[in-house]
Length: 145
Image (cartoon, rainbow, N blue to C red; front, side):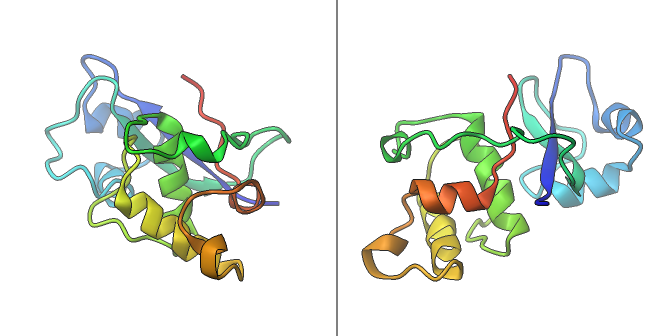
């Protein structure tokens, strides 16, 4: 069974110490899981952060359905893109300089192309734009907003 990543959406009044306690971990561990957080005292409401290592999903249907190739454009901002980025990191396919975010970027495309090559795709099938076959194998965890 594939593993999924657990995220938390920061609420007004939250800080990393409080969040770490909620998830029975440490601030240092949260910082390690979230390289995009540069200052432990600066998190923002609605920011999505990783709060636990990958773990086994409890039930089937825990994955994001393929949103279609047209979804992956520079104009798209979605927590699905960020969740995809963390799965790519989990799979050793990161081309991110910091960490993934919710805006589709060249780093996402390069990371996804690395994933496609890892699966054995080549040429135009490893262009960094997700297709159904490679997406379904990535097992992006379902995003609940």
